[in-house]
Length: 390
Ligand SMILES: Cc1cc2nc3c(=O)[nH]c(=O)nc-3n(C[C@H](O)[C@H](O)[C@H](O)COP(=O)(O)OP(=O)(O)OC[C@H]3O[C@@H](n4cnc5c(N)ncnc54)[C@H](O)[C@@H]3O)c2cc1C
Image (cartoon, rainbow, N blue to C red; front, side):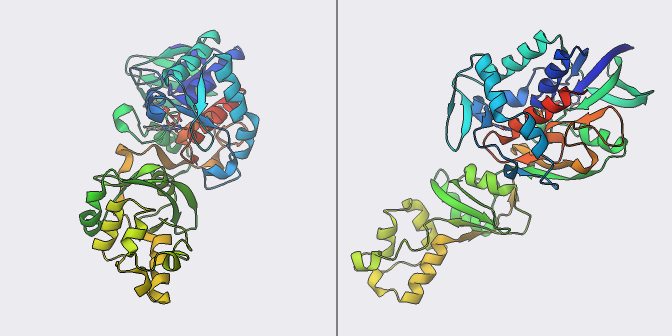
């Protein structure tokens, strides 16, 4: 049996950050991953350019049963710390929108950064090593893969969430938490496109490819100003991905297509113009046609609308309701909501409170960020704080 100080399960964003930090402290660290490549999710993130953090990271951008939990780690290892690391490795990057930072070149830059940090800290990474079993071994742990048995003093679970099973997502982290008596909160897909009810699919399918800026709102009042994209399967785009994390089956979401009051001057200005002609100045024509076909709107010369009818049109455009049929699920979701209950973990170190030397970091925990680099920042911050103590 090979003995290590620290074993990290998962060579993803959180696991590699933790491993490098622990290695710098002189710990002998082994990272195990069942994949063929290091950091597979990083490589496909941000359209291949990895949105690695966000200028505006703050605790309010995270969903967690205990909203205070993320504060300590985000304050100890901030977006500025990760940006400094990116600068140290001379990686060129740019702000795309809303504080989102992307590599100029490729997400491979971020994987190379993490591998270089691990190498200089003496970390060993073993790929094609699926962890099959973990057991308590004295004060530490025994870890079994298909071909090897290892022991370690500290075990870090960095196995990520359930999204994208094709690139290595597995439920191992949740299983281990339960094995050691830690509570796991129910999981569901987040940052994911919506599918449509059959009747909406009929009237909205033709809009595939139409995109427009909206403000989307969930039933709990959460709002995002982002783009809405109609697809052949349903609705997507950043607005939908963001709100999907706040949506529960059966609920509606509302899209502000035009802000309330937009029609105020229109009647006086162009009394003879049809509503649909006036709207075409502000909204894609195909969307207007679909709204008319569905009966969400009717069109006649503006002067023929009574004040009550105009108010109804304004209301429809300011809060166009849609009840999704569901989501596309883990197949296309960027993240997994829920996971290891943070009440079971120390917010300073990510250690399991009732199992000495066991740690959970990154997405496997019940911490989910907004779209826009927030999830990687959680991986960096939680991985870094654990790396100081494992
Ligand atoms: C398509 C896509 C794009 C994304 N883009 C962005 C973005 O631009 N910005 C952003 O902030 N977030 C993005 N995310 C989310 C982000 O990738 C994750 O939140 C982040 O990778 C989580 O890091 P992690 O280390 O916790 O888990 P992961 O990065 O998922 O790493 C977990 C690792 O554990 C390994 N593993 C799992 N089970 C086992 C096992 N049984 N044995 C051994 N190894 C195992 C996996 O192979 C994997 O390498 C994106 C996600 C997806 C799916």
